Length: 325
Image 1: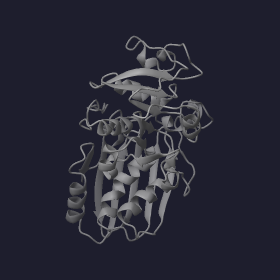
Image 2: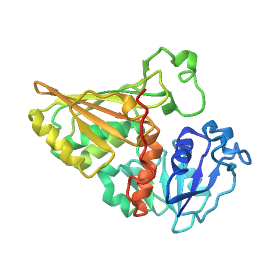
Image 3: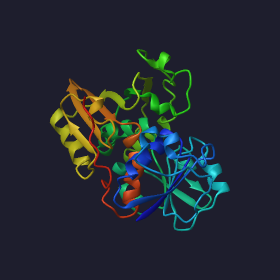
């Protein structure tokens, strides 16, 4: 059994990790670390666990676990690792953004691999330290990587993506308050969202000469979970060839489905799936990509990475069905 610790156990990504790991056949939860909730039952923060999972939060770390998931929020993982030492065999999966960019991946003799399985599966299998991708970054990269692989990106890409309120974290704020978010919509960080760095990095990993702009407008939706992303760019290839290239790119990646039919977000919510829909009019290609921001966009992908790191089938514990109604 894989012995697991979770650091920063009170937030949404930690709660989603616990929900999935409860039914993982090869994993057992050793501790969930939270200084604010130490000694309290997990269901105090994660109400969906009441009656199903009896464990208390702790402020003590077991340094000998097999794997640690860091759910501390952006910018806090480095300082935690500086103050807490783990065994030489312990694998670390960081769900924050501290180690995602190439300039940040080397830390205290640790070399972090960018954990997008559809891009770096071989490296993930041999890694000890993983930087889990961002949620918008996952949806957008999966939409673009087949084009980059075939050097078909030649012009700017226009991206519009809407995320649920859980993407903003568990701490309430003005723009996550129900009376503000309900029946409302807004954009934020237009053209400068922090995930653009990792998206460009991955595109250039496959198509080094791509220097055009990814023009990204992120939106806040009035729903809790999910990302609905639409992208369009100019492509000269015919539709049949484009579809064939997407299907070939993802043929060995079980969580990505390519279709030419219309799709909706409920097809993936509470699953580790990404569905990509392709449509072409003239020389303009429209790509729609849908994921659950907490699952494929965070905790599910982290468990997918764990599976690969420990030599398991990457789908283990992740056979999750959405609710389409």
